[in-house]
Image (cartoon, rainbow, N blue to C red; front, side, top):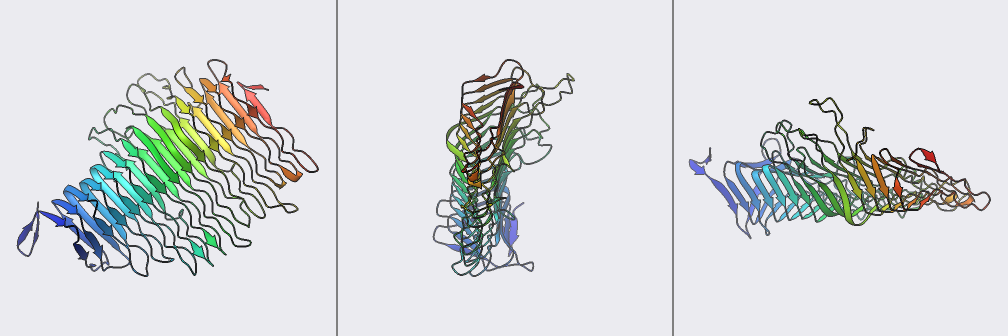
Length: 494
């Protein structure tokens, strides 16, 4: 039903290029417009309200922001207002911003639709830089489709602000980027929930001068009805660096990519296909960087009625970087979190047997190394990386659960007075093929080298086909070299 204002029926809203629509705040401090018609924004929509949100909703029709359009939740001298946009069909070609002013926190940016959400423009929920204090914390940016698809080829920023004589802004606690397709349980619309992501996503922590660097934030990309996930993007979640004496760099961010099945119909499984350039490394600093650990998790969880899941393919990469940061009293650990890539076997109620897990193809080079420590007596290099790649993660394998790895894995411990240890790599499936080099050496030590790591390749159906070089050498030490680590192939010690 169309809205009624001053006796006139309102059937839509158009903000022309060059025009500005300023919405006043209501009694709750929010500014909002709700129309049961099409909304087209080619000019600017902003608000005089502070401390609330700016909402523009078209409940029954479409909401379109053109290339000259802008929805602006920024507040002079304050944190960003949240910006909430909704339409049955939602397209952003312009700018949506809730960026914080100098040293202020960013607000949230939320674009939601019923059937498809498209972003080819810019979203910004970053904290503000500060030239005389701490940087502002990041807010979060979200693209969501309740019963359909999500597409984004634009730029999405939810970064911590830079700080001077104060800490860099945190992008973790309240920040992040979330992209969800078919985000409703018991979805009965019959749309397979595709996700297509390009452009640049940046959730890096703020850098700091005379302060600690801010932590990198989350990137979470999901489909709940097993649609195609096609991601070819530059994604950064780097911890903020610190140049101040005794201060630490920020922890690296986290990346989650997941396909599941919560549909009330039987979906047609798509493919999880990933490419681009990802960097979720920890920041460098002068202080203790021990807990400076990045994290990446990629999962294919769902099955349709025939027991078919979504295969996972990673190729066409520059690289995946998730090194821990360097420190002045301890290098950052890359081992505590690390990278996990799983396809699952699931229980079939029809047959009573476990269903096959989908195959994994992994071609990028992965850098997940411990952080280096400045030379000092008793200081430690950071632990080496942790990588777990399993086709059939629950251990129920069949001939379709192929893990094919051709990228090189660099997991060496960091250098220090004592070199870092504990690097770990596991690749498992019914059939495992590895042609990449896996380096899990101990870190170099001024006094003592780090212990070499652990590598296991485990193929159930046939012998593992390994043509790559596997290395678990102990780190070199000025006084004592580290001991070598352990390698297993199909359960046999090498």
